[in-house]
Image (cartoon, rainbow, N blue to C red; front, top):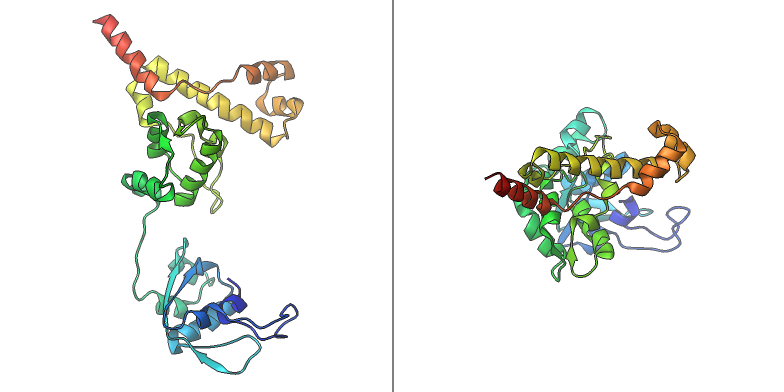
Length: 268
């Protein structure tokens, strides 16, 4: 957040200051100001914020008048602020001032039991998740956390035929992307129910899933130029077109169980 949004500005304080404005601290007097992603603040803004946390005072940009903040300050960040302070990217004195009461909220992948309740809060009027979709989400790592969950389901609602979201409705291209923060690779996730079926059925699901993601990724990399995509795959253009036209999403996960049950019943 820019300093003018926090502390306000006077007309003419800087080149684009065409008018005066109150900042968040002026509007938040005797209430609560929430600073999201405080770890991304510019060093100059960190220095100004230190005065607020230590002396409860601040200056409006372009003014010499001291103002007082009487409210409560709550901040949040996805970063490890201790690590940022060691690297000189976050002021240690500011960290000590804001870290008086800390709450650690684990990432979604560490609290999968909250998934159903989160979906209910994000989408109080639906949609409903099919069994194969829910099983996949319960096994997915969610590198983008709750925001990714919301994005995936909003996208899936646009592709779903009706009120129920199935596994095939999810935007599968997103599952094999890299995490923006840290470039940590995300694996193709195998839902737990894959391991409920027989080996050959499970391998068929895995091969089709990988083939679908791999070919679409190559096409995306090359701007859907078949000749270039085929080179990346080590195929001739003819072979690539054949595989592209034959690619299919794997069968729904519950069918793996059904197939296993049928085969078990026949063998007995």
